[in-house]
Image (cartoon, rainbow, N blue to C red; front, side):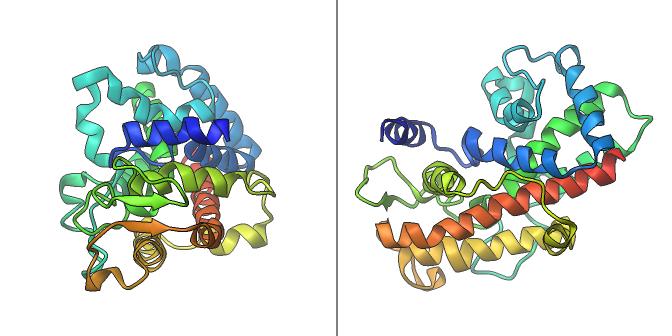
Length: 280
């Protein structure tokens, strides 16, 4: 309960459309990926992150381990203007009540899926500067997690649920919203539910999840935002109206745990696929 209240205070105090999964979710996605890359790629990741300190020049935001690297892109926001250019790279505003289309939100590469593809290409380029490859690695580890938080892939002109006030069980404050619930409170419960999602998965388990492209994964997360996130919070098709406060009672929260866990698992295994492709 104490841990829950601390998390609740953090969520309602710092929720923003550019934070996803907070530390726990991102670290879990990264840990799943690390368990499921090849030994060769695992060694390459260790080597690159071991050199990250002088290359990234962000002592306030270390990235020596894959868990630290997973939250680096959020950590550097507090450094002011230096990384302001990357703010829009954490999400993509694709309206769930219109046909799926990445062209507008990804104009000039300013969206999470475009940056994932860019980072993979930089990592594949062995002639790229070492600093650029290390930064691409830490961005990629974070952004794949972001893409699988559904409210970073689909929304309703409400900043990914940040403007939609919500109740979580018995907890209801003016600063609690649907985005912060999926970022932290629900993610915390889903990841903590036994058994742990952090393990080595068989090829048969990985194959169907890793299939498809980054755009396919974007469309899938966008659909989860409509079919699961908003639908469960509002109790009806969100595209016929979303007036009032979203409410997630205990039964609804319990029913959402499998979907939230699946998104974390998808993120981890897909990150493993991209890292294998980029660093083999």
